[in-house]
Length: 253
Image (cartoon, rainbow, N blue to C red; front, side):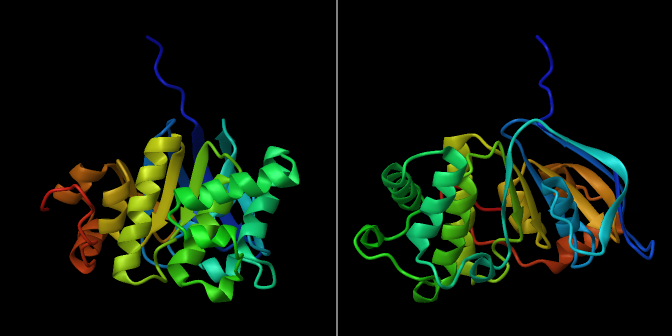
């Protein structure tokens, strides 16, 4: 039996400013079909820049210095700030339907139906079908679900999540984590999940890559890293984080 080919290969990725300040240094990892990888580290460790490099959306003033990225599937991204990612002047169902229309090439009527189906899958109110709402009329958790729906409307093989639970309270964090876990099982996409919280990454991901100052300092099985961390920085992160709320159906930790 042939070994499974990686869906994503990041090889020796290095990113720098135009002034040649290194921001990400020789980062390498792979992602297999249906797999989840957690990129974990403090703010400024290079996690989000690595995600943006995968999608080809580097901020102005940051450039690829070295390395390669090979992707065997379409990728879509869920951003950290849901309200900032949504158009405040456009109702949310219409926004999701627009993505469906342009990415799936469906008619306007079929796009709206597909958008409503996605929103139902994500647990949003059925009342949106009768009365569309603006982002300001929804909660932070509901806006984050809209952003996830827009990413899934692209039918990605790879979902890139840039700290999508950071701005949410603990209860909503749990709901979003459970939603993403359920959708991944149903839809089969692979995922790279960026967070500063090791507990959240371990709840979602089978493998972890711990980043510090632009470099991966530890990489391996999520449970193995949590139980037997080798790098002092990983041990510091484990001691610093609050545990994620217990996921439905899982036993005590």
